Length: 228
Image 1 (cartoon, rainbow, N blue to C red):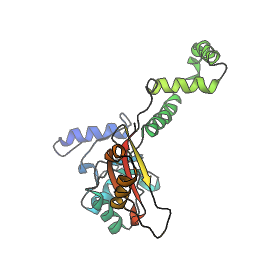
Image 2: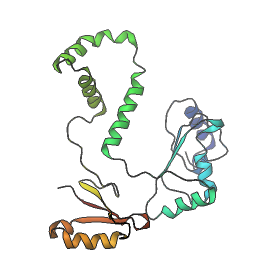
Image 3: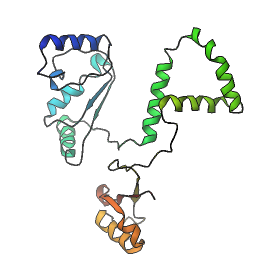
Image 4: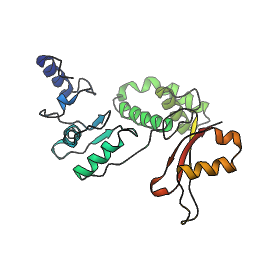
């Protein structure tokens, strides 16, 4: 939903969203204020806004009338200052989380499957009991393994092992490592950590270090390296 859509079409879209005809509404700031949309439990902002008031209005689409909700805002190193500006001017502290790993996504999809299973009617279950018993027998009576296999198949994540992803950039086949000093007097940042790695690691390994960043207050460094 955006400003170039005719008003009558916007009204139809809003009506269908309120009636739960679809679960996701993609919108510009045209939906950030002046609309009463109950029961929105999640707002996702693809980037932080430049105006703090805009952030408040966008995030305020959830947790209406005393209810609870979640607002997720994506940001990059270039837009991190906007996050800090929102915290400072709005007097709030936002929880920072890294890029979700494949395991996180799969666990989340499994929770979604469980929610959908609540819609299964008891009267259809007898048609699947014979196959369910056969599956449990195939797994040596291990019902937990049998159910886990079913969930893996339903989620679509059942064939290949998961690839590592950088916690810093999300790049596949990279591991993120953390380097800290055991001495409180020896402060460590990205520059000094890279110098130590160049000095003590085998040349081929040191050359394959990718992104490296300092931990706050010179508490160490985090860096990526190929997982092989």
